[in-house]
Length: 289
Image 1: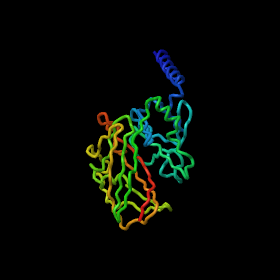
Image 2: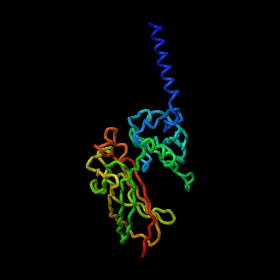
Image 3: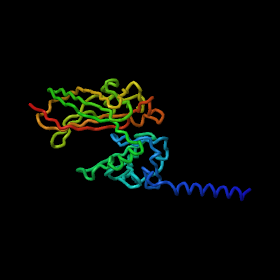
Image 4: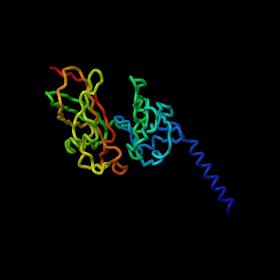
């Protein structure tokens, strides 16, 4: 009996080894420095607007294992590599990174961030080779696009108009400031920021934000469906203590999505996906006399 059990064990080990031996290296999309790898088939989509990868199933090891670095692969070739950024690090991340200091997303998704100085190095996250490989595996999703339509100044009043467009092939559920109210919506974003030519922040809103209760709560009535190819327009009216001087400025706005609040089972509501992450746009503006 012991001999038979031993032989069976050897056979299983041999089959497992053969399976690993014949895995096509081109099948791998993500490789961690500790040897952990994920194949293209382990993922259900990549949102190129937010640089978020979504797994097909939950992967708690991704949140608990200790990683130091990672690589993104296309057809077996390394496209770019990055690091995991911890809170106790003595420096800011440079280039691609995955922040592991706070649970921005639950264990079915991760976002690759990018920080650079004077555009060195260039952002590789949507490199054409990885985009093409993701297309070949039917994983590429284009998410949302944000355009800043106008920033108009009238004395101490500032009107900001922007448009959200669904570039994805699926319907998305977005946080709707008209449904949430401006105070709750601005809990999730800094809103409109304006910088002068010296890169000094000359305007940020003074809206009193409304905190969800509990802090990690979300409600379906906050969200609106935006179908593939559809656009939605929104406007904010801000006030300021004193008017801005005439001149050239740069306006920056971040449109937020939900993040850690959404569980694996909540991501899809019917045929629509809840938009996670954030998108940022900037616009050069001129205020005249």
